[in-house]
Image 1 (cartoon, one colour):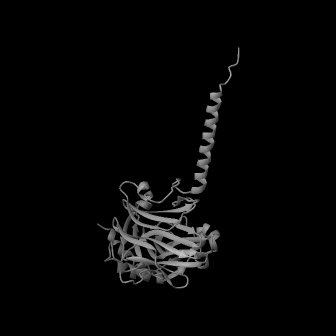
Image 2 (spheres, rainbow, N blue to C red):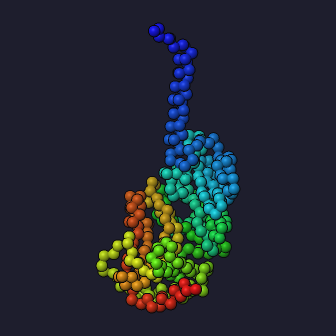
Image 3 (spheres, one colour):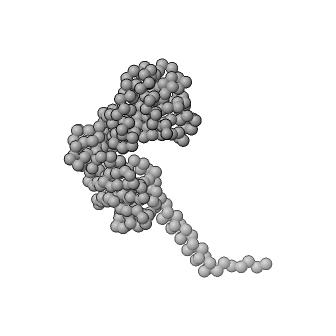
Length: 338
């Protein structure tokens, strides 16, 4: 048989397809590298209209802030506030948050650090940052908005020359008169309580009652504070080994959670961590080990940079105590009776 020659036109087509494939791969690789882990892997020549274009149809833009090389915006989508940021690279705009490389809502641009997120407002009207030098830093943008039954404050802070201003920054809630509401040394007098009755050992399906100072079951709150303070005043450190991953079963439990504020800790020019200072007291009544108190607190101010932060347990301290004066707590569980 006689071989058929490939026509020149066929060579041209194959060459064009190969060039197109190589170009597509090059562009795709370029986009992948430039977007660097961002959830949205696209390039934009400008930020104009990007928020409107990318948001769900029923979402609302509630806050925007832009400079020559940084853009942040917040969306209210149903009952959630979501934050986004973009940066300028090689003359193009790309998303920087959310991203697998940016999990904290922090963006560095030269010597400036941008810190952005939303937090529960409670009774607050605005926020500021208490700097390591004891000065206050005002956000470059913020707004308070109602989200379902909760008020939240969305904000953007700009910390200039941040590498020379390392240390711990405390996010402070302020009332409408500018008074600070955040209490970094708050105790049980500011706690939010969860009472649990678990007669069938159903764990997450157990009966629960929430008790707040100005909220649910607030009439029970002062009694619960007094009873808890009385009980934990008479405590003795548990000497035996204790497994925090397998707590002994208790039909009745009380959890007191104390919010002592959000922190941004800058360790150096490349290491920083955003964390919430939550202290808790967990009372387990009448377990096989007796009545117990588990105290948990966390502090990442003294962690040795990101190496320590990677092991979150390094900043968490837990202690277990034996309780002997729990009779004052038992009558409070009458709240579960019909």
